[in-house]
Image (cartoon, rainbow, N blue to C red; front, side, top):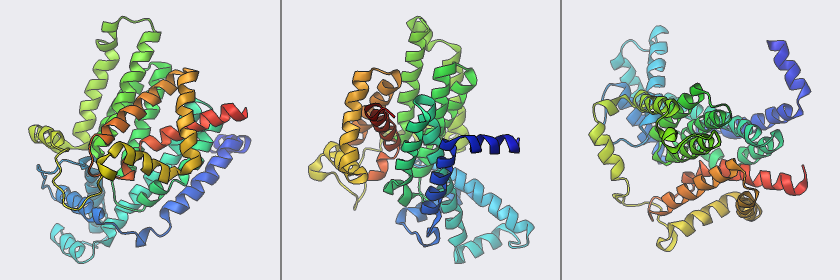
Length: 363
C-alpha cells in the first residue's frame, strides 16, 4: 500500500504541488500559534470546560458543536494526564487548569489549525471532482493564503471548524450527485448537521444538498413526489437528526430552548459589535470580500458568476444559488457583520473564478 501511494505521488505532478501547498499552508497556520490571542477564545474554552464537567448551558446554544468537540478533547487530556500521574483527581485537574489554562487553549488552537490545513486539501479534492485537477489545485493555492482563514486558524474559534465540516459535507454531496449512493446521502446529511451545530451560518450546506438532490432527481426522470418521498431523503433526515444529536447531545433535553435561541439570533443584545456601513450589510459584505481577496479577484469573481450563468453547468447553478442565498441571509442584519462570516462562501467563489480563468486561458 505504501509503495502504491509513493508511486502515485511520484507520477502525479498535481499531488506534488498540492503537498507543497499544504506544507506552506501548515506553516502559515501553525507558526506563532502560541502567541495568538482573541477575546472569543476564552468563551469557547470556558463553555467547553462546562460541558466537560457535565454542566450544560441551556441558555447559550450557539457554537455548541465545536465546544463539544473541545470538551471531548479536554476529557481525553485529563485521562492521559491521570494515567501519567499529572492529575490525581478531577479536582486536582481543575485546580491546575485554573492556575494555567494555556494547555486548553493550545489544544483548541492545534485542533483548529489542523482542520484549517485539511480544508485546503478538501478544496483541491472538490475542485478535482467537480471540474478538474487544475481548478482544484489553483483554488487550494488561493485559499491557502487567504488572510481571514490563516488568521482564524491560529485561534480557538468556530469559523474554521465550520468550514471543515462544511467542505466534508459538500464533498459527499458531490459524491451522491454523481453516484446516487445512499451512503453518500447519509454522510452528507450527518456532516452537514455537525456544521450547522458548530455555527448557524453553515445552513448554506442545506441549500446545496437540496438543490443537488432536486437536479439529480430531475435528471433521473423521477416524479416530483419521488423527489421528497424516497429512500435517500428518508435516510438523510435520520442522518441529519443523528448528526445534530451526536454533535450536541443536550439538544434532546432542551429542544424547545434550542429552537427559541436560534429563532432569536437576530435580536441585537450586544453593546460593542461591528455594525454594517451606513446600516447596509449587503454593501458591507461586498466591501469585506473586496478587502479580503483584492480588486483583481473580486472582479474576476463577478465575471465568473456571469460566466457560470452563461455556461449553464449544473454545479455552477448550484453554487450560484448557494452564494446568493447566504449573501441575502448575511445581509439581512446590520449588526455582527464580520469577514469571518464569509468563510463558507470564499472557497466556492475561488472554484468558480478559477473555472473561468481555465476556460479563458485554455488551461
